[in-house]
Amino acid sequence: MPMWLCRAGRYGEHENKFLEENRVYCTWDNLPESIMQFRTKQELQQYFVENDPDVKVKTAMNWASQVWPFAHEMKKGEIVVLPSKIKPVIHFGRITGDYEFLPQNANPYHHTHQVEWFACDIPRVNFDQDIRYSFGAFMTICRIRQEERIKAVIHAYQQGKKSHPVVSPELIDEEEARDIENEALGAITNLIIQKTKGHGLAKIVDAILRAKGFTTYVSPAGPDKGVDILASPGTLGFGSPKICVQVKSTDAPVDRIVLDQLGGVMKNFHADYGLLVSWSGFKSSVINEMAKQFFEIRLWTHKEIIEEFLKYYDQMDDDIKEMIPLKRIWVVNNSEE
Image 1 (cartoon, rainbow, N blue to C red):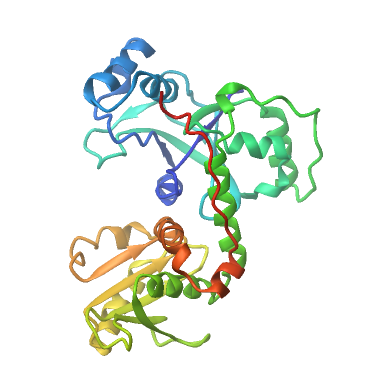
Image 2: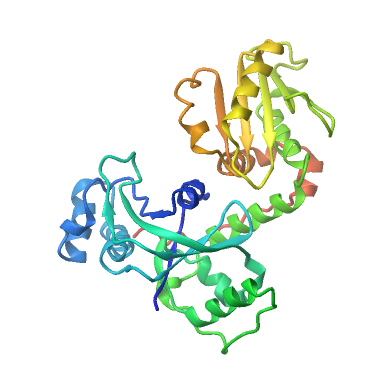
């Protein structure tokens, strides 16, 4: 039975929505039309070219080859593979609904299948290296070919047993070509997870803020009275804006009560703004409230943490660079021609 890789964004920013809503989405933000209206893959490709002057033909072909099967080939009963970017794990679901076009949904959640998540949080290390490479394929949506071996690992994990290779490794076909950039990003993410358990994530956020030019105070490990970091600009930190930062490194998305608590802490510390950081993201109760909090509070998930960390890495202290050692490399960009 076919098995499909479906990513939840470059940084996994859609992952919690996928899991909470028991759905997978085709998160193309330039496709406000039903995929079913296109009779051929070539028509879909032409649509991409005609509706975005910056899209080259090869890019449009690549997009069409991923979007087309989401509506026309993925069927009930088939398995969806969701590699997590929040944790070093893989989630597996079974498709329970036909393709749906939901124009009333916010962009980019117009295209979807209902899914039953039947095996979540299976560690990546349980899978052989070639299978992990297929999970790191360049494509956002694509067919995975090692179905029986993957199913064997799922079964063994559910039985509490160690899995064993079923057959010799298969060659990765060109549809599953490795995305080196994505693999590197995954390795950086996993290293941050390993090094920042507990209070360690606050150290990373503090390093980002100091690299941005803020002077900070970090609460000692233990009860923090609702604030992990205080930040303000200037050498001594007497400037404005004054920011209260709350950092959550738990495996579960943060709920509304934490957002409300941060608002109270901001008043106690006479802060101008608040920053709520949650590696595992936020529940819908928090997201739905953010319009009201737009001028006072910002949210960071692992996506923003990694983006800011990489952006300001060169300006960070040596102890951070020793904890998360990185180096720059150059590769040929074959994404456009």
